[in-house]
Image 1 (cartoon, rainbow, N blue to C red):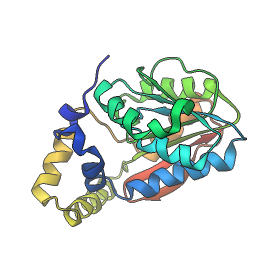
Image 2: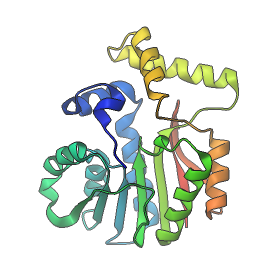
Image 3: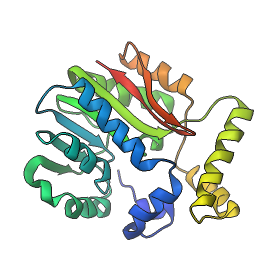
Image 4: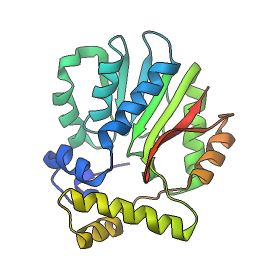
Length: 226
């Protein structure tokens, strides 16, 4: 399996830190909320796995919140991980870089996180299988905290959510037509399920009480506690 951020987003990978903040509403706040909820649930010296961790932005936030945490950053885009290795080098051997897909078996751990990554799973049955893999890997107490876009099944609600997303991009230097083109490009590989679908998948995977930890427009931190 291979993946290229550059081909998917249609920007140079060195521009990641800039463009992700133009594309994703409250990107930094979303990451902080993921870290906060992990810290609220897991015990000391946790093993945290960052699925699709790419350039290491979320892993860095987790590392700051958990000075005693060990972190595994999983990704299949080696160019993104090279950026992550530079970004996170100050944390030394606390962070491991693993070139694996989030669909592969996971080791026992205390928290599993992801940010703008799992939407690449376009089939809800496959996503349920990934969630089941995550549930099996988590110790108790453990948490899955996933930050990603979710989209209502109601057509009017979805249309308004996309309008809010477009307005955010326009405030950050992207024209309306460019935003619409980005959405069209991303639909070739991405899918944003509704929270109804996500919660059903999480329940079927073993999480008894799926929940939303934070939400702002389309961006949602959700998951479950084991």
